[in-house]
Length: 293
Picture: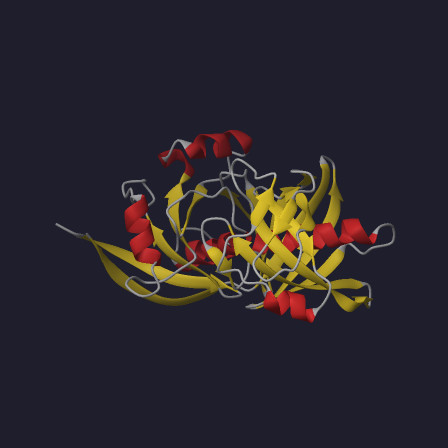
């Protein structure tokens, strides 16, 4: 006998999600059910699923509460293939708006809402043009693996960056390369990280800096989801990598153009090291009911 799942469809610059409320952690979806929901022909269609659950209601939430006892809500995120992901920069903005509009949390402009994730607690603020999330400390992680992608003539060196989840960023030479790389095929990394990685293909702007703001364009293949119209943590990783390559004098504020829109990235110092933040829109599109078999 099936059960009815009440859901909301949302997206951040085209990176789309199915969200549902389960405060007490009573609904456990199997990988097969997640794949069925995310299927774009036979299901609702999404890059991933987000469950709104209280941190106290699931084991993974214990670490979030130990880090910050104000992290009442946990973003329980699954990729479209049914695998779990540590963090999602677009997803956490959409998730925050979902919590607010469902009456599960309040967030006035200038205030901060703490959200638990498997990548750690993240602070989200509300602004005039959407939501901004502090992705926390970032780090160079994963070395410089060679990246092979279909229609990319030769393997390119990437740069491994972790912003709560793993990324490998690759610089491209021109528009033709950015448009031509076929991301229906999974990029191959050498060496291949045990847990995989999101792979961003980046084209610097010409000029790179306008009015003190860095400009890049990117496409992304997300681990567990394939090519998506946008990846928030990927935009942050791409901006960090480009600043790293640009060297001294590169700005700390970046505009990242993704297939689904534009995101803002900012690097700033804190007591525990440099943090990176992501800003952009968060849209809720429609509500519905999906029958789970």
